[in-house]
Length: 320
Ligand code: ASP
Image (cartoon, rainbow, N blue to C red):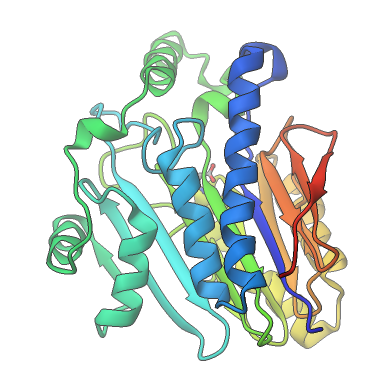
């Protein structure tokens, strides 16, 4: 049987364990598992990697525990501007939206841009208008707000006033969600969605909607979704660089992802992580922060979920 695989991340800005209660962690993990299972059901039924990564990301966008969709970060003006992208490795088709303010599930809009327009990236009001026209759900900007993000914004503004911004935790600052998949037909896909950085300048766009920086997929090589300080990921073209290391330099998925996260990005002293899958269905999810919500199911069906260092096994998903 041809291998299938799904890998997800919920951002490398995961709070320290003691900052959230047991119930919050249990729900965070339940939503990670739900995201994995939604994708796996599609892949196990012979469905497309593209559908699987979209389904996985939608679950995390709808969850308040991740910085994407409901639960997204706030700009310095106290509003939400959302970025997302999706890519399929067969024809290297891609779509993205950035600085959108009303699209309930930004990843669905990224896919609509890919499939229903001649563009790769639509920004701001044009992205919102495009989503409405494509029949996607739109919501008031306040739908995305949660108490946790409001507190993070207040805390960052207080730090900025005191000149202690450098001491802010990764969790206060940022997060993202992403998914990568391999389907039974050998096609790879990647998807990423984010509210970006808390207290970001209005109009700031990170790496998540930039193909090659935050998201990349190429059949026969790998699919990658990134999380961390977007400016560095754009300058280092991180997702593409992982694929290039494998394709041109013959590195394994492990070598290529470890080199990016632990050598290149750690060298810049930024929090960074990613999830990636190769053409054989191996999943890697390296990060250099305290924690990164993540999960994966490889060909054997074993479900893995983690928020910090330890990885939990959660049974085996059927192949059907
Ligand atoms: N990469 C995202 C951005 O810069 C943030 C993150 O992943 O934490 O917008």
